[in-house]
Length: 224
Length: 224
DNA sequence: TAGATTGTTAATCGATTAACAATC
DNA sequence: TAGATTGTTAATCGATTAACAATC
Image 1 (tube, rainbow over the protein chains, first blue to last red):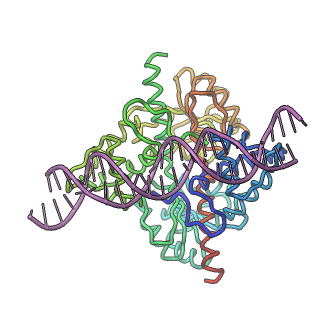
Image 2: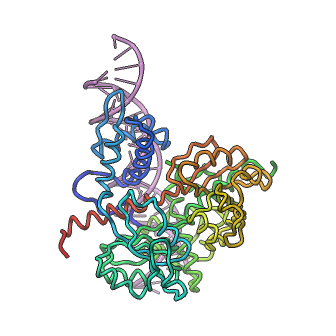
Image 3: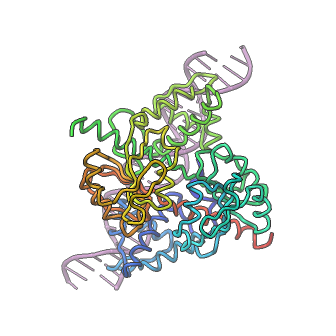
């Protein structure tokens, strides 16, 4: 199981639980800022996220986001504080390894730009794919992984290869200097100390849905 | 924030925290079963998942998976118990709404089959896409969403539309009888009581990675 | 047998919530 | 002012871990 949060920096004292909520706060802030709202109260945040109002205030206090009485928290400040804390203004360059459906979808996804994630290349081992174009990218041979990582000092790879190749690709990338792996394969990767793996187990999401759907069909019977 | 686990059924007493670990246990069981292993100890599980050994044993006890002294837990039993608990043997039919890159990637992904998830259709609102083929699917008009949900008693939709359409599509699907939404859009959806939303915030994963990479570049300085 | 391992209870730790003072 | 709201402390709740007995 990956650690919920990476090793904490010395500054703010953010608990793992609070850390996990940051993306949600950020998303709400972006959305509301986009429609011109200036302030949001802990009550409204708590209703959207379905958590306790006090918890929201504690989270804000921990993030050193100060609210205003009667108004709530300034949305733009909130968004910026979170971005600053997470380092989202700095550009993070990443290579995608695996040019299957998912790899391509991630390469072409525009939603990463506002967060500083820049995809600098797309690699695969299939000769049929190498040399083809995926949007602005030319698919490169996975044999060039180590040299590209070294030359461009890439710190992050996005792993969308088949399960059978996941560990090997990781080992090569880590040996070449990669410090973090965004793992979309259903594999628990082994990595040395100091390398961070974030597992994106897509099937985990389905499992919770399956559980829920099974419960309701039991409770409500088989009929309409 | 979506509830971590759906409303519990009356049987086993699984905590939210244990529930969250089930997909990981399941994945390890599948992998090890695939290479012919029969048993796995709590120690080995704890090392793979990087959690405490006692916690693994408590999880197994809660799941009513009994181990054998000196051997550990029978892997196949473990996998089956989890599948049974989560309802993964029963087929769950789902519609994908949004035939963009991600929607297509999910439609063509083969990893869902072993878990009972069957994609029965792919919908979009773009006249250019409607009628085209995506693997075995013909992209259908999103205007048919309600009628398809009703006719086939679809309980789950997979949402890969643009953010701006997410709430509207959800409302239509829920009104037609959908009970669960697998939400891949960066939106906090509003749904009535009794409808379960699982948010797959892809950017949340990147945020934890960004934080980690920023921390190490601070700690290790700018030099090589 | 000794060693490896499970299973359980009690202690600890961390996260959430209730209560309430402060203040715009 | 009264009402709405933040911010903080103490109490509670839930999850993890330590300790250890049981047993193959």
